[in-house]
Amino acid sequence: MPKITYIEHGGKSHTIEVSNGLSVMEGAVQKNIPGIDADCGGSMACATCHVYVKEEWFNKLPKKEDGEEDMLDMAFEPKKNSRLSCQLMVSEQLDGLVVDLPEKQA
Amino acid sequence: MIKTDALIIGAGPTGLFTAHQLKLIGLNCEVVDNLDKIGGQCIELYPDKPIYDIPAIPECTGEELTNNLIKQLKPFDIKFHLSERVEEVKKNNENWVVKTNKGTEFSTPNIIIAGGVGSFEPRKFGPKECEKFENKSLFYSIKDKSIFKGKIVSIFGGGDSALDWAIELSKDSKVNVIHRRDEFRGAQSTVDKVNELAKDGKINLFTKYQLKGANGKENLESIDIIHDDKEIKNLKTDFILGFFGLIMQLGPITNWGLNLDKKKISVDTEKFETDQKGIFAIGDICTYPGKLKLILSGFHEGALAARGCFKYARPDEKLRFEFTTTSKSIHSRLGIKKDD
Image (cartoon, rainbow over the protein chains, first blue to last red):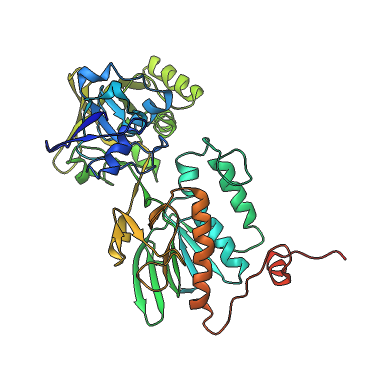
C-alpha cells in the first residue's frame, strides 16, 4: 500500500499506509490525523482539507481542476504548492508523498 | 417567549424535510438558522452543483433541491428565524429554553439539531493582529457603506462579493483590490468591469499578493502585503475588507452538554435522540454506527426524530401511523380538499 506522510504545522510527522483509490484527505480522516477537517466530506466545497505539497512532489501530481483553484482562494494562507487533499487520489505513483498541513484550516 | 412543539436548528435539507414530517403528524415547529437564507450547505456551498442521489430525482442542483423542499412546506405556516444563531440551551422543568444571539427565546419540549457541520461564519484573515481591528476598520461584510466615503479601502478576495464591492466603493473611495492569483472567480462581466476601472486608475489591483500584516496602534494605518515571490509592499489604508466566503463552525453546540464524538453528536438509531431527553440530532451533525452522510439519510433520521418528538409534545396522545395517500387528517393538515 502507498505510504503518505502528513506533517502537522507544529512539525509532528505521521506516515501511514493509504489504500489505492482513497483520497489523501480520506486517508488522513480515517486515521484521525489532526489538521485536516474536510467539513464538506470531499465535494470540493469547503477548502478545509488544504495541504502544502512538498515541491519535489507538486509537479508530479495530476493538475488541478478549475474548481479546486477557486476553492483554494478561500483556504487559510494558500501558497503556490497548495492543494485540496480531497482531490488527490492515492495510487502507487503517490507512494512516498509528503504533505505539510497548514497552521489551521479556517 | 415563543412556545413550540419542536425547534429545528438548521434550515438545510434535513431540517426542512423534518419540519414537513412534524407538520404531517400534527406538531408545530419553528426553524432557526444562522445563514440569511434557507437551504444550508446546499444553498451556500453548492447551489449550482448537481446532486444525483436523491430518490426519484435523477438530477438536481443544491438550489433546486432547496426550492423543492420549500415548495413542499408551502401548505404549512412555518416561522423561520434566519440570521440567528442559537447560543444557549437550558432545561426548565419538562421544557428546553433556547436563546439566540438576537435575543429570541423559545420554550419547547423538543430540539432537533440539524446543524450540518455547524453554523456558517465568515472566513477570517490569518495575521493575529487583524482581530483587534475587527468591526472597527476590518470587516467581513458591509452594513453601512457610507463609512468608506473618501477613505482608502483595501479589499481582499477574488469572488463576486469582493469585486462587486470594489466596483461600488470605487465611486467614492480609493480602492485597492488584493487577490492571491491572477484569475478571478467572479462573473466575467464583473471581472471585465474591475479590469476597466483598474486601467482608468479607479482601482489599484494587486494580484499574487496576500495580507501579511496590519499596522497601527489604535487605528489602522497601513497593511503589508506579500507577493508569491516574497516581495513585500506597504499600503496606506483606512479599512480592510475580507471576502473569503464562509466556513462552518460548530460554535456554541459544544457547550450544550451533549455527547460529542469528533465534532459529531452521538444519537440512538430509533429516534435519533442524544443523551439529553428531548434533544435530537439528525443529518451530517449526528453519528451512529453505520452513519452515511447522505441527504437521504438525513430525511430518514428526521422522519424518525419527528415521531420521537411526538411523545414529549403530546404525552397523553398516541401517534397513529398513517399514509399521506389515504389519511384524512393528513389531507386536512395539507389543506387538500376532495372534489367528490
